[in-house]
Length: 446
Image (cartoon, rainbow, N blue to C red; front, side, top):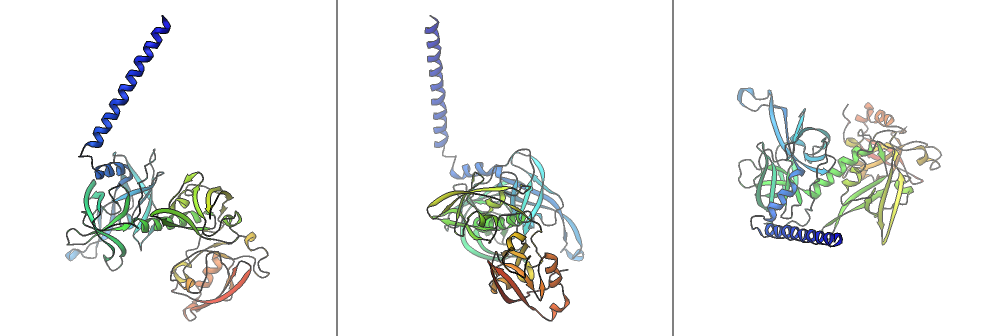
């Protein structure tokens, strides 16, 4: 008797479960068939928690009548997009420039503050860190390499302080150059007629799939239906560089990586490897594709650096890589930087440098035991024109050894550079010494 009762209860439970599943499925079909729930409705819903509203007070110069030139306090506003779930946010630099306290509001009305971590005035982009008790969902990232004229897009942002305002338009044109003032020129912009207003700056431009394809940046004053966005591919390249600069002040792996697009899909490829670096010793080569870092799949160059942003170092890095048809896993210990990357040589020479380890130079040249390793070369700089490459070690310049950053500072600040702008330099590339003459672009600011 008891057995028959248990079987009956189980049959009833199964019937109820089946009814619930059928009800849920029917409800889902009804939702999917609802003509009001368009792809753009879904796109905005899915991105809402990845868009944050920014506010803050800043000091600016007045341009009003007799008060022209005087300083005044104004309320600033803008938008940011979450590019890492730990709270790293990408926005326009002009939104947060000069703001003492950056106030952040999420879509569900959580309020906090953000810290400005890094910025690039030339491209008007900046990275913030928002601290919340829970992770923020990362925005869905698309590509700007396959955009089409007349393609439908939507902008989300803090327009005039009206939080999470949504506007819709089309892509009007691509590759625009826009000068907004004497100091700021934007290049390769997406032109759109989606309404973008003050406060939208730094927010996402989305396609019909809900992918971020741009960062809203500017409007044409006095014009209607003309606004602009930075292509997402360009914005993420800048974000990768900013994050890499933050990491290299503490940890060194020796790789320069870039994002490439294969059939419109992003992949991370090693552009160069510094000789004697941890990555080089582990067998990483130029052209290697990085598939995972520490077990996390990656598709953009910035994710290599973002994986290390909160590492206190020294630490180990494990990667899944592909070289040719071979897929392997490599691990290596990151070096803790003894001297932070020097910005001193960036403006006059186009170089970012860091201290080369004694092990790196051991046995390479009898006269040079220490030097400064090149970690970045600026495009169209004096250093690039002389053929200096990432991984080279500068061991002497202007008749002086460059064993430390302080040595280089002494050389670049010498008064006789005003008369003699060409500097003789010596580098070690692998085990071979090279020399040349480099022209100083301008005196470093004291």
